Image (cartoon, rainbow, N blue to C red; front, side, top):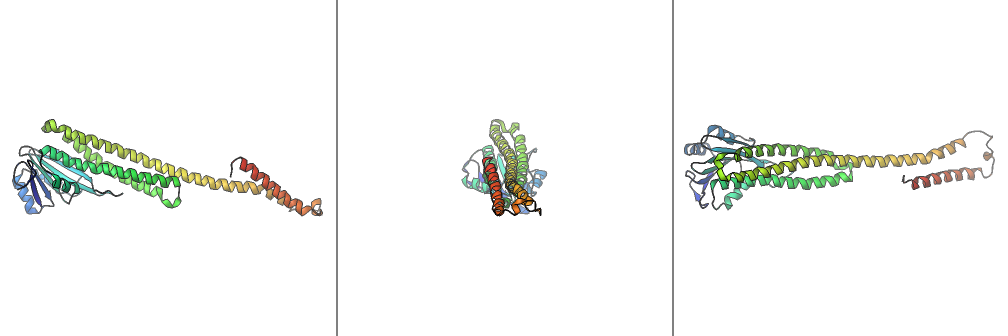
Length: 302
């Protein structure tokens, strides 16, 4: 599919003109040949644009500027799918050509709302919409981290917090690499003298990508903290169990000694022939247990 809008007023026009925004989605071989015949597209750039899964990059060719900008799909899920748009900017004819191998939501929204503007301004607006997908991901990630923190504080063995933390860490590292490549491409773009006074538009985008990068670094550190909190909660639960077992052991140890002494077969114990010997034995057990329980209660053992 090839479609075009005039930069002056945003009206639909033929694609083979100057001062237009040309949008190309999954073109047929015949449409690719039509583009090559009309615009001086570098073959290497076209090959990169057609490649599936290419990372973000920027290159300056003799007849045009070329940017691959790989972003995230919206709405975001814990495993976000990536979207890729290739931008061909022809300064002499003032043509911006967007090339994509699949539907991209923010391109469609921009197409519907475009009512005219300069070529550089349009390019910046489209890239800005792509940058917004990273900000949306960081916000969604923050919400997921808060939920993980609650699970970690509960310290429940069935919550599988470590598994979720490591899965999120892998996802954050993947997005971090994606952001790093996109930011590097924008850094090369903003330094071009061809942009002139409009270079500040792309410097703003680079700065925003830097904030996304910092947010992902903070999220990675937060995930480490969540895992530490979970392990601490598990350790506290284990300590409470050990403490309970220790209290029970300390409580029964002197009682066991008392019962062991009077469980020996020596007739020399006068309590064996004493009418109140049984009462004396059980009263001793109760007194020992009560005094120990009171002592441990005052020390806060239970």
